[in-house]
Length: 272
Ligand code: 13P
Ligand code: ZN
Image 1 (cartoon, helix red, strand yellow):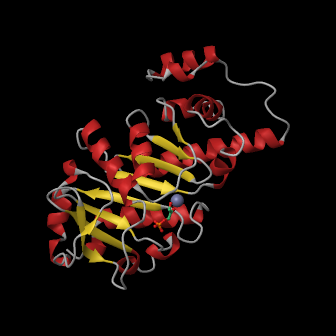
Image 2 (spheres, rainbow, N blue to C red; image 1 turned 90 degrees about the vertical axis):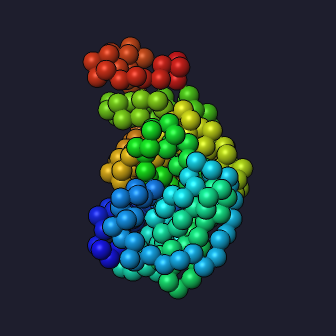
């Protein structure tokens, strides 16, 4: 099968197109990676070429040795992915040590995978282990309201989570473990990758202060849905604050009742 007809390609492209229309991806902002299952790679193997050059990942991910990923290109625009996938995204293979990658499809006009590859692959390695291989998507975006809140809310997991949980009754059902906050750091390297991966041990959502958001998911719907839910909570929060702030809210007791009724394992350490 031509790789452009593969189901995973359709899912990947649909996310990039929808997310651009949401306003989360100015210019080349944001990036997306998908860990391709062996059976999906087997179906498209005729579209792949040999690795010309092995380049450093910028992180060490031995548990991803031999895995293939579909990734957005560095400096490429999300809005262009659906128009010309082969110029804007790539399939990469991780070498047998988990130190280097090689391109086997795409980026036909040249270029490299996203500059956030260290964080993406660090998170993939962790989530692959924690979910027995179910997690396949890591996604980074620049959603406006969420970024705005990082200038106003205290930059700690507890207060950030509680504020967003209060913004819509179903939010604690969707991210019951809460979210982690990375303080401002230089993007694109191993230090921010390590800080993010450490938080991903506890969470599925990680805020990068004054920058954006990382989420993970078993599939594209889950990752997109998580990004959408957190950004919507942030938008409500911005509106509430713009209208003079909360006059009433969801209480601690309300959250505990919700957790009981919905049988969710709410992270109560973040509640008071
Ligand atoms: P890339 O174009 O390298 O993916 O970078 C965009 C971005 O959002 C960096 O954090
Ligand atoms: Zn970014």
